[in-house]
Length: 121
Image (cartoon, rainbow, N blue to C red):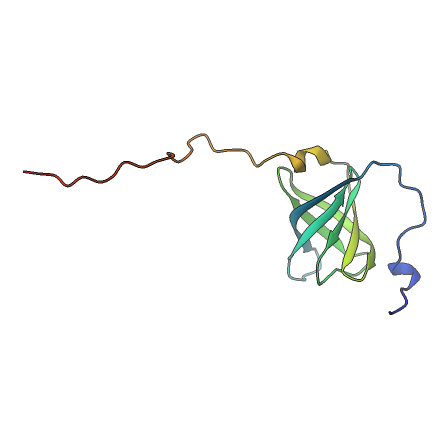
C-alpha cells in the first residue's frame, strides 16, 4: 500500500453538514482540459460529495459536476484516496433534489401502439 501525501489525505476538520449515502451516477469534468469521467457518487451533502472511479483528478483540480435534476455544479477536488475523491462545491446545493426521479416529459409514449392495418380497396 502506497503512503498518501498530506495534500492527498482527507481534511482533519469536522464536517458540519449531513451527508446522504447513495449510489448515483454523475459526470465530472475538469476545467483544465482532462477528459470528463463518469463517476459513482457515494455520498452527497449540501457542500460537497465523495465520488468513485478508476481515475480520480488530482487535489486542487477545478471541476464541474453534472448532477441529476441540478445541472452543472462547480467545485474543487479537496482530497483523494485510491479510487475515491472528495469534491467541495462552490455553493450549497439541495442534495434531496438528486434523489428525486428524473422529471417525465409532457407527452409520454403510448403504452401500447395499435397494429398497422393494410388499406383494403
